[in-house]
Image (cartoon, rainbow, N blue to C red; front, side, top):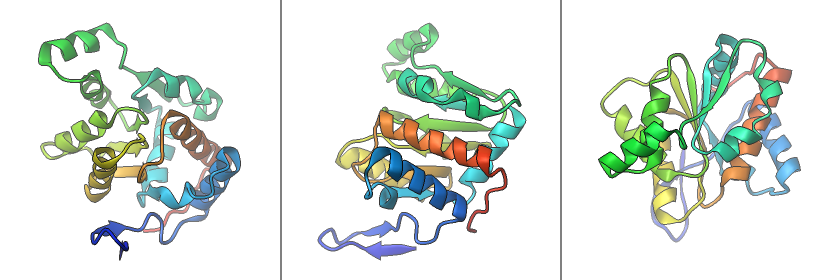
Length: 207
């Protein structure tokens, strides 16, 4: 569903024209924690995103973050007992070295490392827009059915456009649209998602 926003003249996807009970619970919990009623209106959930994250928790998949700050803020108690893991490659010496050799950002190399991890993955981007661009470019050349992206970096025009490009791609995604986002918002959203899945393990999602 799209709507035309006044003043801009462009077409933009409505964040959540219809939401499931699980998504509604997540948004309410996030609003209560962050005290930002407008934030919920900025978040887009892909139709099978919660199901994908639930599969990660059930099968021992991976949550891969673009910053150690987010990794450290994830409530590991919500991962269950299947062996699901939290990974972050941004400070790995090999990532640092490869980024210098290739003259690219560490975030881009870290994405490549994350996508190489076996099993279902949630790629969490709360700080590095270059990571979003890398995943979109990778998707143009290869299947990524085992990947879901949670994208919430904050920023202005170029970052906003990248988040819209992610929504317009066929990647399974959860996106905090517009200028909103950042590390603390990303961690709070992810914990709200994990808590909802742990408390209600059979999420109903809109198709």
